[in-house]
Image 1: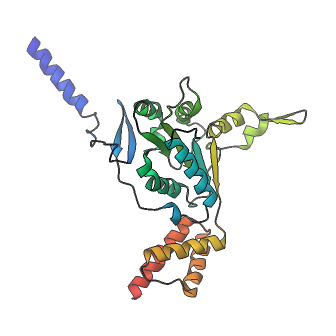
Image 2: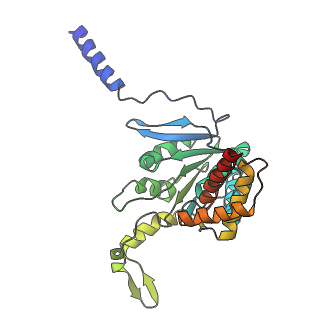
Image 3: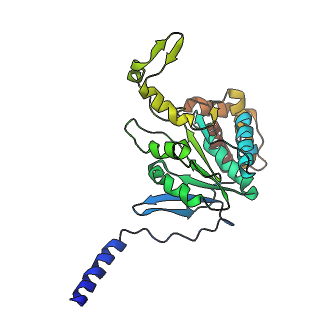
Length: 287
């Protein structure tokens, strides 16, 4: 009987083992500066990752105010001073994600550590924050391209961690998010049906208040707008100089950059980078 039970337990463990995540690589925060949080059925795990590129704050043009505000906020956080969670919102390709990466490249030596969380893994955010609570390092937990659908309950975990629990987030954790939406949730015309005027004051309905309340938990809002032509061309010139050693900025390059943006239907830092790749690559082939 004992042998039969042992065999059954062994078979059961073999089946359960197939569902367990693989053992993650060893994470050493004294060496690793970035990690990815992956949620699974038994909680979650941190996977060390290499920083994608060496982009610096000097590489990002046209967003001087946003760079200074986020840099000051993060440095205050690293020094144990009061700092705000940050929401970077606005036009696509305008440098929101690049600014976070550049910030890590700049401040990693000062102690900044970055953990990226995918929107679909936000349900495990409370478990991650609890895991970081007693560590000596200071972490920015980062969610890129954050937005939620109307019936998406994952935002409740983020809302709770930001400002909704009894204990709140630990003092060594800040949350930074990027989004094309300022309010993160879609807004429909019907949401305004309950809005009413009381005296001279406008009172929003519950649906609107619910959608605004998540964004309100970020104390620092940084807006990113489409580039004007001068900023776009200056960014193109910068990246052509960075990618093409000895390649000069010419009138031909300028005209091609304008044409490139026109065909894409917009000017942005991303479009400038893509033009530089196109132009430098083509010039290299012609040589």
